[in-house]
Each structure stands twice: as structure tokens, then as C-alpha cells.
Length: 176
Image (cartoon, rainbow, N blue to C red; front, side, top):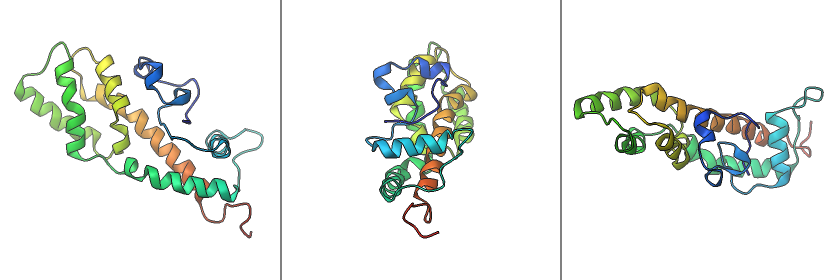
């Protein structure tokens, strides 16, 4: 199960084959989670305008959210320069007009600067496949950023929701 904004995706994401997208078409796959946590994530991330965000969650949902946060912690760390370089490498081979070595070196340096601080989970096989299928000519730095930034934003959004759900004092059985 994945949670995202229904109906919102970039053109690049639309070009990823359905079997390669996380369930529901969202950009961040959360793995197997309970229906109760799915509902809590949805209610917290997309609150009903008349009801608002839940203030408290069941102990089981809070515990599951905490475990999921632990599982996601590696994805939330800033990507290393090495990981970004490895992610960028196939792009040079896939485009119609590969860059000469001098231009490639400068492009990698500038692109690394632009991508600095994005979560390691943004540099996934899904985003790489999206890049390889959508970038026809040697890309600008912003072309690459436009592919990984939405996944990074979605990771941060899910992380904030899980932090809220797992926050001490938000369990229904906690004293008020």
C-alpha cells in the first residue's frame, strides 16, 4: 500500500508502467501496512474539511507507525554523493546526445549541488526508470531535479504523518 495524492502525478510519473508503480499509483511504497494505519495516514494527510485531522490514534496504529518510521529512517537520510553519482550514471548512456567528458564532469558537479540534501529514498529504481524513459536528450540539472524532487517531497510528507501518528500522547489510551 502506498499513500499519496490521488490523481496528482507528474507527466514523468505517468510514463512509468503501472506494474512498476507502488500500489495506488502513489510515489512512495510503504510496504504491507494494516488497514487501520492506511486509514490513519489518509485521515491525517488529507483531513476532511469539516472534521479535521485526528487528534488521537489507537495504540496499535501508533506502534505500527513507529515501526514504519524506523523502517523508513534510511530512506530519510540525505543521499550521499556516491549514491547520487551512481543514480546519475545511466542517464549519460541513455540519451541521444551524451555529453563530452568535460561537459559531463561540470554537469555532474552542478547536479550534485542541486540535489544536495534530498533524501536517499528519492534516488530509487522507480525514479531512475522514470528518468531513463523520459529524458531523451542530455538533461539540464532542473530536468533531473524535477524527477526526484516529487518523490523527496512525498517521503517528507509521509514521514511527517507517521511522526504525528507515533507521537507520544496521541494514543487513545494515553492519559489526557
